[in-house]
Length: 173
Image (tube, rainbow, N blue to C red; front, top):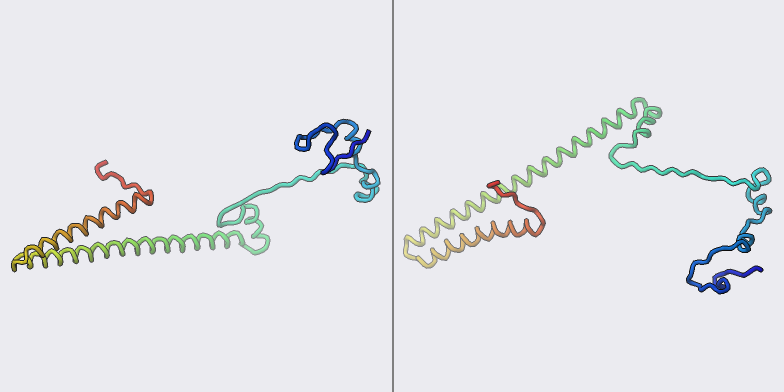
């Protein structure tokens, strides 16, 4: 008894969404036509099964895989040495650039701190002068303003660091 199984016709007595198992009658329907084997594979390979072995490898890094690097010597004399020298030169260049960037950022931060110190000192000197000439309320406002600005700068830096997830180490530890 052959039952038609297709997208529209479920196996008799089994719901569409349930997995269907094959019984012996169905296996006979699924066999491959022997004439197809001879047409596709030719007469020599008819009825033979073959297998394919696939190998996948992955390599990451600035240098080629060691097996490939060894083959550079076959193409160019001292090819592997030249590739290694090029990679070492590139690494040295990259380290020099990173050092320049780090020094530049450090210099910029230092310069900003010096300018802030000079402005704060000038403001305090002006406040002292205003206090000496009798403008006490203006002098007090300038001193309080300087204090609030300097304190705000330090607190703001800590808030930004905590927001970015950078934890400061305790200097007492």
